[in-house]
Length: 305
Image (cartoon, rainbow, N blue to C red; front, side, top):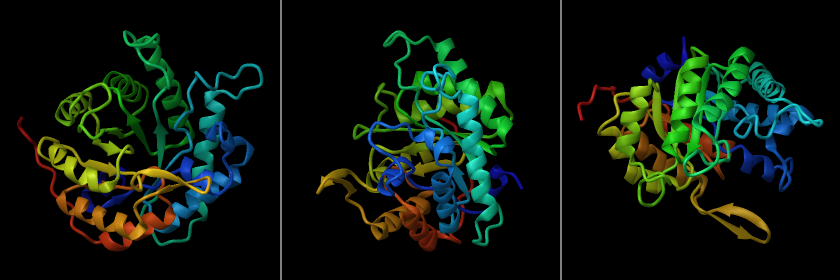
């Protein structure tokens, strides 16, 4: 059964935070590229993925959020994108093989985040260059054995378009897309949920949603705008609330229990792909699964806008 068939049958659970979790576990130091852990400490990444599978995640996201040719070009002792991405997918595979929780299907999402450079005309990176940078990641992840693409935490519609085109043109895998919406319910570039849904469905995205930036309570308010116009499954992957510092540690203001209860309302509204972002841990995902497992999946209907 492929990932899209699974989503039609039951609530589909993604994993939780990666960078915040690795920092909390002591594996990731300030200023380090988390993607290097795929090569230098694969045991840390395997353990993280395994913990999410054991918590009930149907899919884990590869540790490749920032893996692109602007950081990893294979020069001056730096690994190439292919090396980093292949190692990341292999870590996820090993976690999938060793997880013991009963699960009908376990999937691996090739995680793709922003490039970290503004596209022209706001910045100096051309659209064509952005497409090729994303395409390099897609080709490596597809060849290594990822099951689907998750383009996430995008706050610019133009860069999102570049990533989706790269995915559609360089593999046959399903494509999930998740953007960052702020308190104004728009992207940083000013694009509304309705405009993003229209653009992404036109590009052939299989799942569309929102992640990061705000906690589940705020996403509960934004979600109806997606459900009113989306003709594909909707994804919701919030932070554990807002971060603040306590005794030198970054902590978030929503507990595991509160997170799960708000996410239950999000599932009731109609989201069918759910997980967590910054500040969430395997325990957050376990609570989420505990309170929502077995809830019905809302039928996806073609919308006319």
